[in-house]
Amino acid sequence: MKEEVEKIIGDSIKDLNVVIDQVYTSEEEGKKIFNIVLDSSEVIDLNKITEASKIINEKIDESKYLSDDIDELDIFSKEKGEN
Image (tube, rainbow, N blue to C red; front, side, top):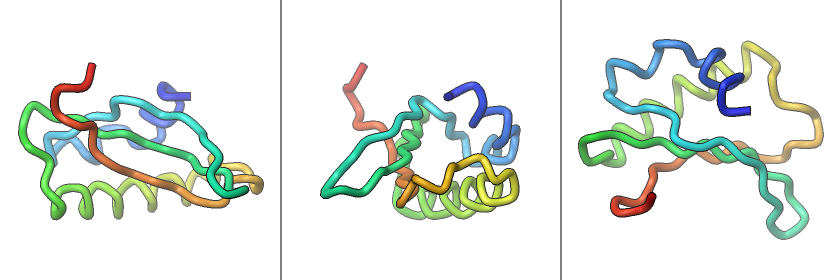
């Protein structure tokens, strides 16, 4: 799943100095959520998350990668110190 998303996103977030760390689905309160976790060697501030989210959302939408049973796309940064 991660490799497929990386292929869709391509180099479009490279200038933000962020990479895709994890991709997984989860379920919360009956909603199926598609999660993309970003990582960087730098601190990922809110502005960078917002920029990356816009780019990723656009690429995912264009590709029609997500199935109809996904209710939400959640893009967030990895907590520093996590493995």
